[in-house]
Image (cartoon, rainbow, N blue to C red; front, side, top):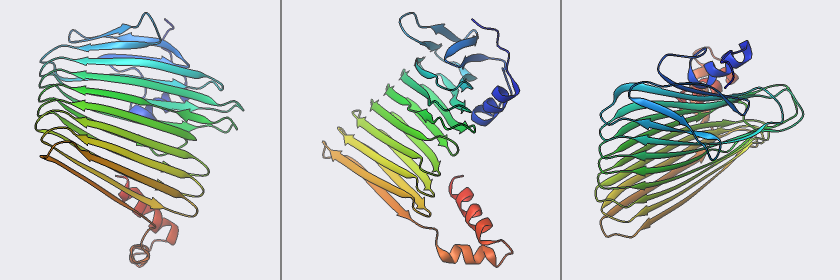
Length: 310
């Protein structure tokens, strides 16, 4: 394994995706330019390299509390195509935070890809807050492409909170998330996306509410500017007495385009499923009100968008 030394550029990427300037104490796994370069474990959190494919297995002991896991990815070389498989096994009644994300700096003319395939297995009563940020930068013509896959299996009374953010520099992304929920388990998802130029972002959710009393809440907020495009697809299957609320709110500017496609399927009489979608431009009255406070039109638009994506 390489020595975990970071350049200024890599530290900047880490700050953008994880709010840290470098290696931090605790459970930590850093992947750089398609290779694992640093791993640290704790008595309660073990990180093991996979033998059959790229990636790691993260084992979190039962009853672990108030610990964090960082598994960032940074890429600074043009032309890399990296796929990594990370599996999380969270023990009974554990309560932890997992910080992930990928930052790409591409100054070359060749596309750079990163595909993170994450699987979560939460035992009974386990609780996880999962934070994932994607960020891209660089002056090259090569694209920055991120296609994450997330598979979730929640045991009885387990809770997974997912917070995903992509607000700058990613040329193309397709995010696929699948989840299966047992009795009284809860899935909370909050995503924020902003696209520019001709960027494209696509989100696909498929959730099976199999357990009695299971619940799911998905909130998507996005802004599509210039000639960028976005697509949001949600498929919710209520297979038992359950509740789910999906909300997709989007702002479009210039020639931006957003498509929202809901599918809610009630396979049980006691399934309560709701989908809401709202897509439109910024209201003129909002801009006018802020301009009366001394902001320019652009400053007013930026303030509204920043508040919308908070």
